[in-house]
Image (cartoon, rainbow, N blue to C red; front, side, top):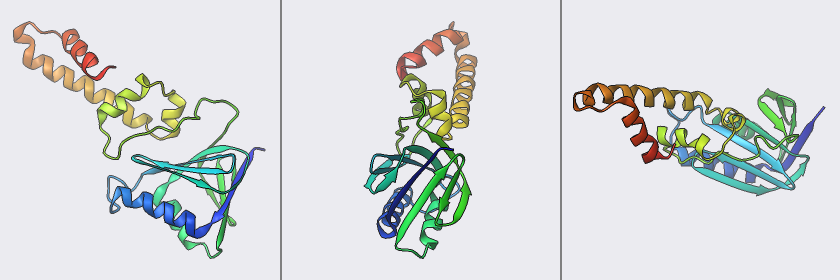
Length: 188
């Protein structure tokens, strides 16, 4: 069974998680489901959310990439009593000082999801539509829980093209013309 782990001072991890949560502002309907991407590599712990990335030095074993809800992870780490936090990742689970949670984990057997999806804090449909153009694999997009948002952005684009066509068809414009303009403008 694959496993990976990291050990770090609670104060350092907690400070970093609070900084990441401050980037998002107050917990709201829009950001309460923010995904924290955790990557463990050689003596490094990388924490990524849309708009922010922190790399921490710590003790690690093996490599893994995992995702968990930022605010939930912050709450769990805050509730720990020990001064040093040890987190162990196994297939689909994280063990934090005896507390086991189900999460999405992937061990680096392939390089399909090695890259972090870097998104601005207030990303738009344009940013989502560009992910595939920028070379992110479906696995990377899905791993970061952005696949449904990308689907919705594509659907919204189609609806907007259709609405624009309805308005401009009297001028001899067709949907293909509108798609070409958009594709050129946003480089899809």
